[in-house]
Amino acid sequence: MTWITGACAVAKQIRQHDSECQDAYLIEKIGPNQVIAIVADGAGSVAKAKEGAQITVKKAMQYMKELDLNNISEKTLQQLHHIPALIREDIRKEAKKKKEDPHDYASTLVAAIFMPDRLLGLQVGDGFLVSGIEDEYDLVFSGEKGEYVNETSFVTDETLDVQTFVQREPINFVALATDGLDHVAIDHRLNEAHIGFFKPFDIFLKDKPSKKTIDVELEKFLKSERLQQRSNDDRTLIIAKFLGNP
Image (cartoon, rainbow, N blue to C red; front, side):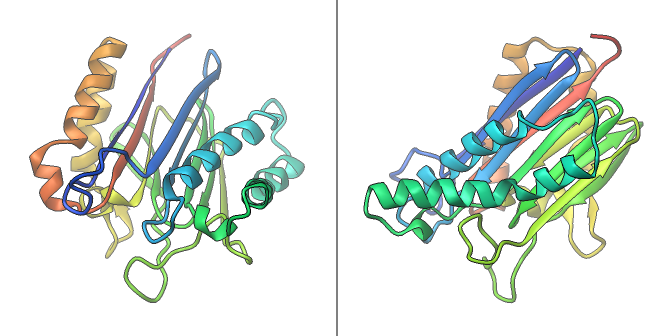
């Protein structure tokens, strides 16, 4: 059985009168023990940040569901790597229809396909992906930053900077998030995941709480005063835990 939840919290410090999160996320169980999880962060400097993030997660989900997960070959990994280019083309078509600049839909992307014996990951830009087993949490992707503060890559870039990952080993915990949680979840000096951030979530899901409980508690955590004081960006987090047999 897989326990999974996701939530988003708005950065009240910078958008006090805007209740809409410019991040987006999607989660879908595609089999008893297979989950696709995706987060995206619309660039704060563009006109269509929210829409860009929404299109990015929607299209990423569509293309990731088309991958052959029963036989993860070199072709599968090539198709995974090509997904951001497909999303970029979809955004260009959408912008052209509306006579808009596709760069106004700029968004980052972090996506994962989670199974008990393997993990596939995909990233463009910042945000992070962490996998774990038995109290060990490995930083698969950390926030890719440019030379300047808040500079990163987006799915609308002319030259895409795409990272992919495949792990063919047992795992039972996955977390992925936008960069609003970087400072509290990741030690960038050591390029490591903070065990103190992820272990409480791992323990919480291990106790098999109800779906309503985990949804409420995660949203409460992301909107907490403590996190608002430590993050000036929207915060989106997906956590998943595999427990035993389906």
